Image (cartoon, rainbow, N blue to C red):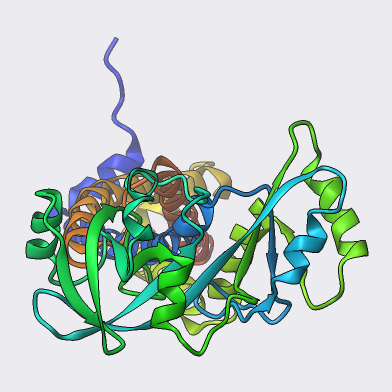
Length: 384
């Protein structure tokens, strides 16, 4: 038995030019959503990679802390107090600061984030950091983030060959003698890691008593939520206690709510959706208008509006699928180009692809529902 070709497909494919225009419009809207959602996820991922690599069950920060480059400080004595609470195994300080350094290759200035700690305790679970703890014990010696944004090819090549690189940082000569990889972020072009003593040499205005982050490790079997509640009740209000997950979420929340970047990406996604609705509506409306007599004939012989609405919805779904496929492939290529140019973690994920596909279906069905108003107005009496 031969299968019947769906009426919706015959309608969509009858005029190839209109079909191609519809596919191009939907693909454009989808690419806009892919790029906005991709950049938004890259924003959150790049700015929390360092947080996720910190070895801590609980994190202490200043109540005025906004994000990792604006942490403010709190007294180091709070870490000693923390050690007196049950369930706490250790509490170590982490120092952070941002400043411009001279890029070794070009001698141009670039903003970098500096993180420092006592190298006798490994506080980062990053390959390249743990292996080079002895190096940063040396005066004015730093480790460099190979994922930094900028012209660092020659610098990275030398470091991979175990050759140190000299440059200037805040009018002080320093040595780069090791690599790790975190990647650039929206907050800084790159990262440097060193010892707490080297940090205080670079930032003489800071003192060891001014801590940026307190990394608290708990004894095995301790519940982070319970210990955090005890610390919040027992420590003065000049320090804020967070679980590791809350520390990461705090950074995400800052970029989502306190900066225009997060809003812009969300707005861009919404604009892409609206653009797609308008484009698909125009296509479906034109199709319904061109075949109004045929639809009126179907109504005259007994077909209900629900059947005709089903045809329009089928057309919308077909257009959604045909427009999504090229947009997905092009977006994968655009992600690759952007990743190579900016060193941002921009990758296509199954969750994002599924989300955009669902948005595309909803977008096209919404357009079909709006276009249905014209179809409801098709009166057989007017046609015949």
